[in-house]
Image 1 (cartoon, rainbow, N blue to C red):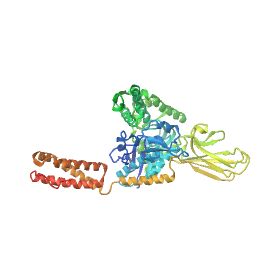
Image 2: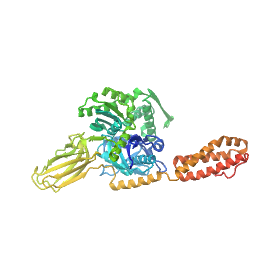
Image 3: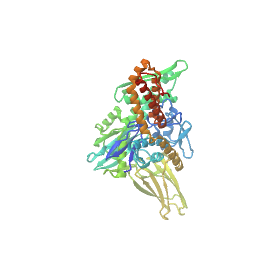
Image 4: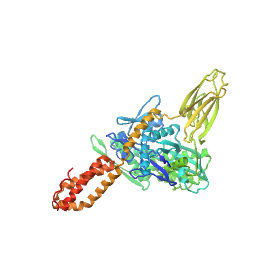
Length: 617
């Protein structure tokens, strides 16, 4: 059967999984790790780096290294979230098209939209899956925060298309985690909730489980609340005293900011298991008078809890709001699932226990459950491997702007999707021949305070007195949460429609161009057919040299000399670097050189330590 993968496209880390022989498994990346950092960089030589390689060079190449791109997916340039994010980014984000109100991420001489950056991460995960499965992969289920709006979902789908993936479903992260929890488990009928606090977003979802049916009852969240914000509080805690003492704001320097971010994240993670950590950042800045400056500080767990108290409170407020909408008491849940790396923080676990009156479940891996659930959903959709039914909801109310600047909700939030709903409106002027349909998403009664999804003009209405022409506006939401809207003149049957799409900064033509460029990059990353044999031969030679080395060192001291050994060491170092970088052609030449050297050195040993010939470079 054609494989389908499940992808948790995270703010901090991403995970890819699949179902094999009826069991969901996490696919390790080509370096052998189960988590791939959601980091993209363009090196100084123009090479694209993704994952751990990108993260390792982030301090020395901060301006060309992108982290937390998920925060910017589906956002407008003018939005408050985008503008607030700009103050904490080490890379440059610039406005692009004024009419589309979009932006680009500038990495050296090149610029990319947010979906293109996310596509680079997805392409890396796709390569990992293809290497693991030994066959091409073209279908995927990708997860998004439950509280993502229509524009953010469509931007994520665009990223999948650019990465060469057919996105068979966009699924909400908490719902996906619940699928992983319920897989092959006789849980009976129970109500559970998922507390999902990741690197950049927070979701809280209430589900009802019964005989393989997973029905979402209510969901809510905050798309700008996550581990990044906890890190930012530590960065400020470190930077403010330094600024007060030295007069230098480390957050203004891109390299210093990246070092602070790395140190903050590391300290936060360590404080989950110890009570205090020492932060040591030598040569963090240069003073004109005092010379090099160092930052040293001791951060305690209570310090961390103090500076992040309001963030934890925001999480609990979302939980209480969603429980109020679902009319559920905190003690009603059979299980409380913790998802997302930030939930490892002891204070989060204590707050959850206090709110719900029970210990949260440890039955799912907070880092992997979302990807595993996505893989299960993919197998359900394509191969019908599991008798499980998933009923999700729309996280936001959908409707249109009406006279007076008000918002008329047509599909209320927490409605099960896919769904369709309609509402009949009438003309507001005599002889009105057109009507502007403005599609909005949000909870405010004031139209301007909600998110604009799209608009279209319905023309050709028959002339009549105000109130005599009826327009039926119909909303359809797919299982992915993608919205389409149509309007019908009830009397004449005239119909016009719009599929509401995100302004991801890319037209269909631009998506096609980006997808082609991405496919060419992926072809360049794939191993040539000769690679496995060359790599195996090189590793055999490394082993033979290692076994021979004690005899060679002894021979060097007894007349052979050090020069042949030094040349061999240099050639081995070059070959090992070529293996690490998968430089197939270069490795072929190195293998040939090492074989000649090995033969010459063995011959020298057999001849009684005469200086070898033919082993030159």
